[in-house]
Image 1 (cartoon, helix red, strand yellow):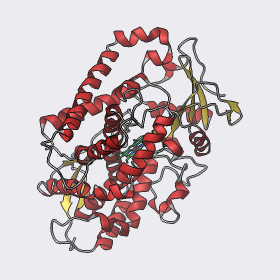
Image 2 (cartoon, protein in one colour):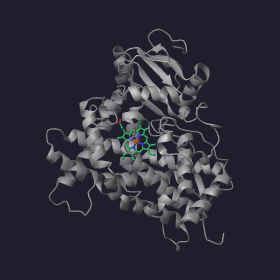
Image 3 (spheres, helix red, strand yellow):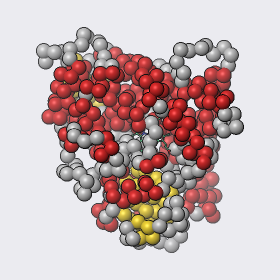
Image 4 (cartoon, helix red, strand yellow):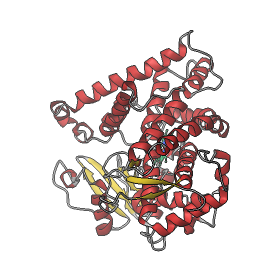
Length: 460
Ligand code: HEM
């Protein structure tokens, strides 16, 4: 298949600029089209950037390629996200679909989401007309929601334990997408030791493991107060009692890791990118705010939009979809070859790793008219299913994101309230808003989004 020339032993490794993966992948897309072929050490890699081919790969390959950092931090794939495609993954995924991400559970976590969005809004109200760092606030919101849902506890933003947890999760994410010589060429594994990378993985793993273990111990302790609602650890403990052979503590801890790693900063990034998209298009911002304010009607000072009002906000839903199309929080998807023949007539070599560029898929000109423009109207007619595989913010196929419902509710509730209660402006001294991104498992806006909120009153 077409692709850049490789050097012996290392393949194309040296061409890959890890600090700007999307720029490099975009370059491959421009030069080679929907599919480009590379080699990372001895591993064949296929980079897929068109909607049509992405669908083909996602429908036929459900395995994840092994990455040393991911294996270690997921208790050797005892989780869902980094597990191989096997009977364990199928069982965990099924259990989660039935017990953790079911519509009933989603509703049961509503008070957590409303309380945390309420907290963010009070914070903003206490400091109106001053610059607010929305990137920090969205991160804190998302991480408090996951803490509430996963173990029924929220921390103050400045609490030592919370800061430590956030730091450990960020470090874990960086280690999960780090480059390991061991994954490419076994004989070079000593380089990972020498660079200190293996030590960092070990240290991060031990600290996170003891954090999860303490949470579990707290939940098991007889002094643990009976609460009215169950959090995810309660649910997992109950499941473990019912099926002691099928569920181990490593499974429980692996799942907790997934919630933090997959469910926290993706939600934060989606809120920040959508606000960024709206700030870049003041006309769409105005339309969205008018729509939300009209649909919800007047509320007394300090009252929030609640979750059952979200169904009225059809235009906001289209805005969120458009934000996710242009700025997918996790733009790159990974799959490993599963013995399925060919792509575009090119034979897929055994052991091939697929990198699917969701960012490019959401901009595929074969699917999207004026793909670079922020036009929510394109989502106003048509069902959600229609967009399946045409944009990939939640991945696709059997390995697609199981937390989509939970994530979408949090994003909609946060944005509805931010857009209803305040008008937003750039601080006068600030440079224009840009869309530069940071590399990583989740694509964050590089420069924090700092905006000034002015309270909306019905006369403005
Ligand atoms: C806006 C929010 C979110 C976005 C954009 C997002 C995106 C993604 C993406 C792109 C994947 C990879 C899918 C694939 O490879 O096809 C994924 C997987 C996953 N996500 Fe999410 N996610 C979000 C929220 C959440 C939440 C809130 C949770 C849990 C509470 C969650 C849990 C997971 C898990 C467990 C996986 C692994 C699935 C598997 O490998 O079988 N995600 N997510």
